[in-house]
Length: 62
Image 1 (cartoon, rainbow, N blue to C red):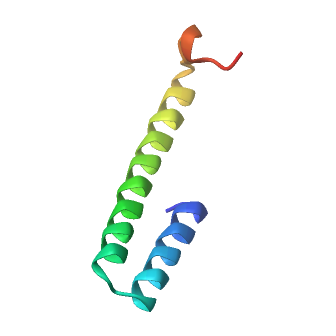
Image 2: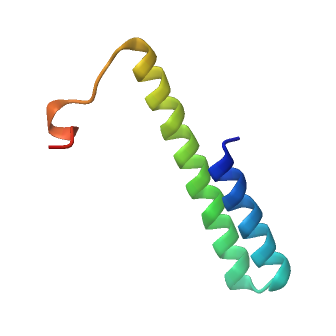
């Protein structure tokens, strides 16, 4: 787990512990989902970088 994902998980857990309302439970679940997606994208980018592949021209920053 990366430091940024650990910090997000910790913050979501603290918020949930402080106020275990349904809204906070949903927010914590959304944070977990976004962290999972971010980690997956990070792994994909690392594999592409190892292979020497680059983003298509349309996706590159100008």
